[in-house]
Every structure is written in C-alpha cells, then in structure tokens.
Image (cartoon, rainbow, N blue to C red; front, side, top):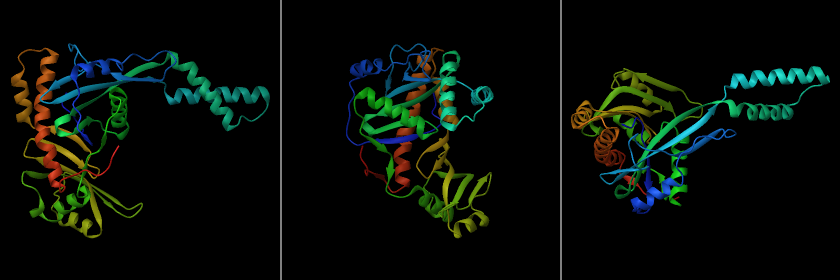
Length: 306
C-alpha cells in the first residue's frame, strides 16, 4: 500500500465528489480482462481483496487503484517469425519485400499471436484529496500517471488538474542547498546521492552515490555551471526520497517509526483493515509533507490550466 513514488497534480477548482455517485461512476469503468483480440485493457479494480467497492475513503482522501492488463508477445518471437515469412516470400516469388509490406506482415503476425499470448497485470495507485486540491499518484513514469488521470477524467466527466507547480525552480533551489548549508530548510538532510547536469545541450552529467555532498569536488562541478537535477533527501527521519527537478519524487520510503505504528495498529490480518490503517497514516504524513515541499520551493504556484 505504501507509495514508492509521488507524482503530484493540483486541482484548479474545488470538487466535492459524492461518494455514492462516485462508486457508480467507477463501476462504469470497472476492470474487465482482455478479450482475445485486444492487446491491453484498463479499468478500476478493488483496492483490497475483501473490499466491497472500488474506492476507499479515509481522512478526506479517496483511494483508487487502476489495473492494466496487457498481452505479452516477445519482440524476439515476432521478429523471428517475420524474418522467416519474409525469406519464404522472397524465395518463392523471387523478389524483394519492401518496408511497407514487412509492416503489413508484422501486423498479421501480431493479430495471429495476440489471442494466444500470455497476459500480465500492473497496478497504479492514486488518491484524490479534494480539500487539499490534490491528486497524488504512485507512478514512476509520466505514461502511467497520464493513464491514471485519463481514466479518472473519463470516469468523472472532467478533471481540472495541472502538474503541481512551485514559484521557484526545484533545480535552482536544490543547487543552492549544495552551495550553502545555511539555505537548507530545517529538518532536511542530504542523503549522499545526487545528479548534476550542465544546462548546455548534450551537456555532461555527474551522478554521485554514497558521496559527501559538501565536498569540494561537488562544489567545483556547480561552479562550472552544472545544476542539481536529482537529490536524495531525508526529511525529519520520517520520509526518505529522491527529488527530481520536475518535482517528481522517486524511491520514496517512510520512516520506521511510522511503519511500526501501522503494524501496531493492525487488529487482525484482514486486508481491508491493513489497507485502511496504512492509507490513513500515509496520507496524514503526506498532508504534512507536501505543503513543506512547496514551501521549500517558494510556495505553490497556480499557473496553468486544464
């Protein structure tokens, strides 16, 4: 349940979902397995095995889970079959098979293999926090976040969101933290990992791991014009993460104290009880952290519309 990534989106206007109406809207886009000729399917799925509905609400946040099922057709199998068919056709008709014809043959191969392909599923979690004007998605890539938002937009009919913006550039702020210890916010510690990049096109990239980031060699790279684009941070021993220059958070880990609190709260092994406890504690922690993150960057910006 505990999110490992954070992609943040801000709501441009207030929304107050009616939970009973929301459930019927989600039901209209409930996940169904791929049909034989389909390559993938998306839909909402139960947040826990014992859940009775497609959303879970706690502390003003609404949890959703998107399931993506796709057919697995190894590229090597397709290419080998294509090569065999092309060679057979060229030998039989004594002619060269062009690019367009190869693409057509490849499409026929995919159509033939798709009904017999194995399927695999992946899950993307996210929650809406209407009072905080936020949508928070546990996704490591922009594609997965976009899939979640697109399906949510279809489900609700509209979704007035834009990426979470701040007044100051995260890259500039993170670079200042490395240059000047006094500019680091209270409760923030650097965690020995960063990535620096030149702002020049095709500029050089420096990646540091298990490195003393206050070392002279790091400062020397900054003095040559490089800026921090990724930085490992420990916030008050409560959250550890890597902050990127686009405000995406990766490798998110919650502190042992919070995880122990969750374990101590489990009254039984019911999946729904565990989910409710984990989700409540996690969202409360993020409710404290996300405004702090915005404050580090000069406050939240309301630029943009959707």
